[in-house]
Length: 195
Image (tube, rainbow, N blue to C red; front, side, top):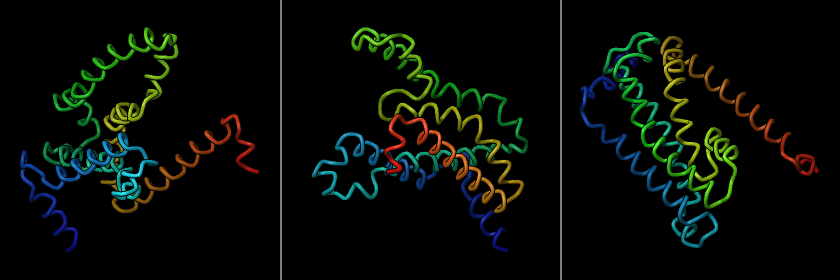
């Protein structure tokens, strides 16, 4: 009974109907990212508005809304198999939507760093491939990963339900601990953290 009610509410949003909750969450996330990147956590104005408690949530909210909208898109287009997620105009439109601006930014960013910062070409391309040197430069790499990995996660959870969600949680937890461990061990002062 509960599954039918939730499914009915989920499908009440008609194709191409505006989802105002997603718009509100994206607006909140945009404001959080702007405040987090412009004021800085040590400024008095940052502390005055209590941004320590909410401004850093901008990117996680973007990622949650992205997953929600991807799943709505799959539902709206009646995608029932994983391979359907990687073909057709919707997939290429999704790729082009962020690839073209990213390539334009790279065309501006690379010469600027080489000329102004006197950085080597290898360092610049290394920065681009690993998420960039600046704040938020990792976001495009995350969107690429979401585009290619989200269908696998979506269908895994769709097939196994709540158990699939719990399994994905533990996979994510193990992956985060592994990455933290790698960062901990490769940091040049890792032994100082133990003391």
